Amino acid sequence: MNPLTPAASDPVELLRSLIRFDTSNPPGRERACLEWVAELLATAGIPSSFLARDPERPNLIARIPGRGAAPPLLLYGHIDVAPTSGQQWAHDPFGGDLVDGVVWGRGALDMKGGIAILLGAILDLQAQGVQTAGDIVVALMSDEEAGSDLGASFLVEAHADLFEDVRFAISEVGGFTQLVAGREFYPIQVAEKTPCRLRGTIRGPGGHASTPARGGAPAKLAALLRALDRKRLPVHITPIVREMLGAMADALPLPQRTALRPLLVPRLTNGVVRLLGKDAADLDPLLRNTAVIVSINTGDATNVIPGVITVDVDGRLVPGQTASDLVLELAQLAPGIATWDIVREEPTTPSAPDLTLFPVLIDALRRAVPHATPFPLVIPGASDARFFARLGIQTYGFLPMRLPPGITMNLIHAPDERVPADAIEFGVRVLADALSRYA
Image 1 (cartoon, one colour):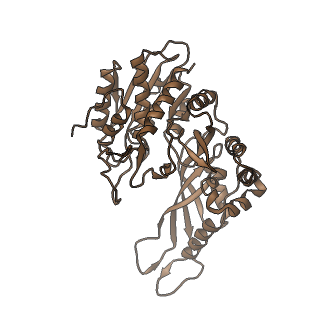
Image 2 (image 1 turned 180 degrees about the horizontal axis):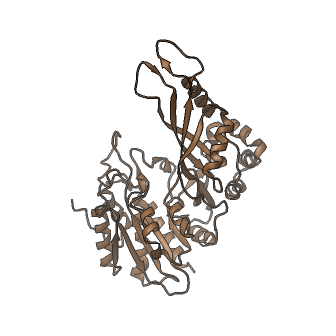
Image 3 (image 1 turned 90 degrees about the vertical axis):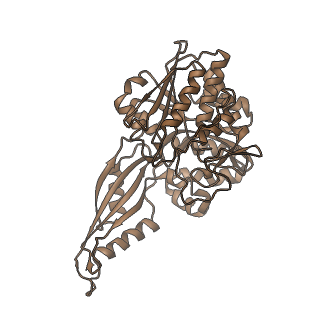
């Protein structure tokens, strides 16, 4: 396959070409796409190199010299995309079709659209001869959709020296339009929840399935499932969530403001969440740790009452919380049912992110959309930001896209993922402006 080679000045054609590389993960196959990007950068006079744990799934690194007046700034993203198997699309998910001003395809939003913005801004500044205050370090990575073991995790563990003196980074997720009560909000991600994996072990009397045993491990499993479905874990209002919801409330009309502010009062939070119903669905996970059972193992025999049942739990921790904190909360939520072990734990993210660069990004956004309301965003999921945070690097999710009402971030990983061409052009202008003013 030989995708169209875009003019360096056309980020929309750049995006269409990126989409035409099928980098679905699994299996990934990112190398051909990254080689194409390396050639594109080379034509603009920007050398790059590959670093890899798996040679067929490398990571591209480039460094553009600045004036030495500020620390290096890291721009990073992932080139792999979520699979499309089992989905029905109106257009080929790897065709990069441009239909009525909209680019269709897997990765249009997550995150080949963001890569097109990032590269477009760099190439635009390079073409204009603009030298930023500090060096620009570019990292385009593999394997984010499957845990980043070959991508960000590998680079941070094996090549931390590449990011020496870097204090800030720009990547996903943020800078896109959210329409609320007819007003344009632009979340900028500055924090995220930390993933962990727990295993619960439930014990009870076993025996032959011909003789029912009441109150055993299956009954305890049912009680655990019921508790997780009907109860909520304790409320934790972190400083950044307080700032996020406060900024949103300040910009909303009085009815919405009145509904939002009580979420920040812990004794009222759960009642407000229940009252708001689906309108609070996106906010509720930011107010507490969460635990979701993702697998259950009851054994293989069909005629034996299991004496031991294990459950695997996907946990997500609010900034400042640990996996041990979640274990205690689960034990209190469903006492005496299971013993809990921590299977996988990552360093917790700080409860108060560094917002030093935030005003620069806000100013760039408001120069493009004067009535925009930016606010700091915490996401319930996880991104590569958590790996760079281990090096003391604060990531800002800021790859701006001005989106119409019918196209939202809900299309990420979904069929018919697409993005307006002018949203990509908008993002290049805003990001290039922010980079030129970085000091």
